[in-house]
Length: 496
Ligand code: ADP
Image (cartoon, rainbow, N blue to C red; front, side, top):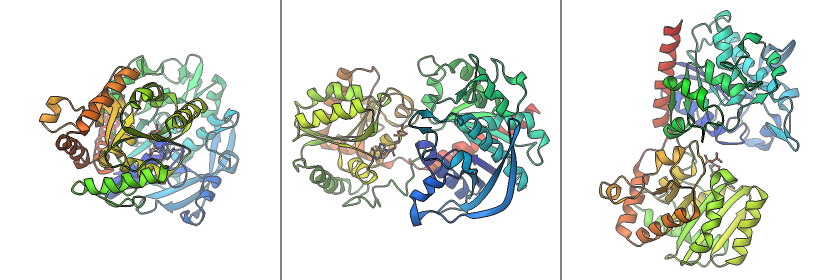
């Protein structure tokens, strides 16, 4: 299959969130499965500069694409490179006016005011690049609102573009909370007829809504876990688009993200003092735990259960529940290690708790890749009681590292963590603890359950083994994406 993956960010070229990881890891996994894959992403010079001499070498293509943005023509220059460690051809769309900025989407004042213009430009560039280089893709895979115009452009204008008349589109929702909503006059920037600006297609309560546009015009829609695919069809999680999503439920599927096993694998993790696998988990984790305690200035003790938490510090991640149950937790002989950065209220609240219990709580404010790995390996129990979680990566890292997670059963957490009920323990499917009601005391009840089982070493090892033995890699997810692509292609043929 010939596949174009369009993404507004992709590791290692740029990253603000999980989308950047997915775009690159999925591209690689698809190429390894034998598909011909192009990854197309903007060229952000400031992001590349951060990589220093680790930046991949870029080759300027002798190609200038004239892109219509409203009534203007804006030119796109293109760089080509290979995604490191793969044979994925990667194209970076260069337009300094739009992409040479200190950050990807926002500045101090909030969203860049020309975000619609920037990503209309990028979306059209992806299509024109494929046309100009005669790639004739079977699939263009768009991701989140930034590239959500692509399915509409393909459906409405694809027939007029050489080699794109047959191309099907797949649109993936990574986080429904960010929809790309703009005032109605930005419709002019898209170059599409006003007739599409209606409540069944691109309009949403008087505004242009790009997320809705992607949902309506794509041949297949995916999101990043099966449970999230169901949740977003409800008012509680649908961010206003639940009705639109329900109307397309026949083409909506959830595919759990994979883990980048080059970076995250306890058997060869470069950040750990001792690597380990399912057979050596006891000794490996003991060494990592001691190192973690030492590094954070906590008493070194093999017996105390260590609770870990690595997260953006925002309401979404269930920090109210964690902070609300910490005093109860501190009545036990345990330790809590937290790494995160985010809302000042949470940062300050957590730091206060660490001051109150210096022997038991260590809080690190900031972004620290190395410490994140050490916490995943050195903790016994991982806390992730999110309000909502489209997929979530940390619980999967925990499972791979033999760190038993306690999660709220939403989104991807519900699809990866199997609660240690008596039945699930008996049939060896349990790998963690989960609860539903969003309350501190309910979280604390799970903590107590976990501490109880922690003392039962045989059962605990079984929970660890079940988590560690499952395949969390992209290979598994890529197969599901290929199936979604095939359905999209069939649908495209059928609808024409
Ligand atoms: P989200 O994408 O909603 O933030 P995920 O669990 O899907 O949540 O992914 C978060 C990723 O960011 C993980 O790889 C996690 O380890 C990493 N991360 C989050 N906060 C930090 C931090 N303070 N330091 C290092 N890594 C972090």
